[in-house]
Length: 127
Image (cartoon, rainbow, N blue to C red):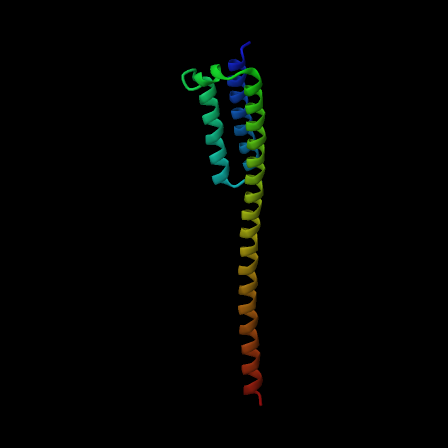
């Protein structure tokens, strides 16, 4: 098997793995929908580039060592970016949760102020 074929099949495999991982992480609510869609598109692009010979014709010009190095570097970069996306998603979810808690606390604060004002009015009228 030629180096170009290995690179092409590797791109298809990495694209499929990216799509499956982004779908799974979105399903277990560890990734937000917008980032999951971006990763799905990236995976689809990798699959299309690997599957369509006209788009992957450049792989013929790469030597075996260079191809392996580029493939490994691409996988490491994709893993790092995927991990970064998970961290951003986690921060977005925590931020949303914090905003809900603040909203509930503000509502409880207003309710307590109303009760305090009502008890102050009752004690002033009782004098």
